[in-house]
Amino acid sequence: QEQLVESGGGLVQAGGSLRLSCAASERTFNSYAMGWFRQAPGKEREFVASISRLGSITEYADSVKGRFTISRDNANHMVYLQMSSLKLEDTAVYYCAVELSVLPSTRASAYAYWGQGTQVTVSS
Image (cartoon, rainbow, N blue to C red; front, side, top):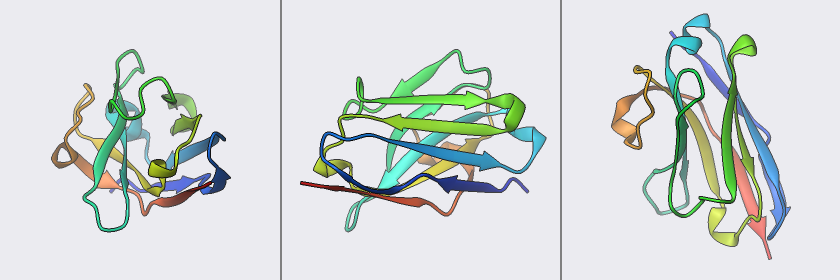
């Protein structure tokens, strides 16, 4: 079973940057699209970004377009989320996930495996 471990979260001031990392345990990671989702307190989990198997196709939520960049390193089974110009409303637990398809989806139901999440807190 695919295991995912997120890291890189923390406390950052509004306008700052963070880079989240997600390490996958299996080589099968390279066969599938990956995504980042987030969940703020009292809210449902929401889509943030996704990337195709080879990294040629990316999708972003409107709320993060132009500020966040998703990327992947298949040689090292890693996926990243570079976050810039952070806003208070970006505060959430961020999760990476594996989708059992080569093309990225914005739907959480399309993702089969999830990490435990990493907290991102943006302060004023």
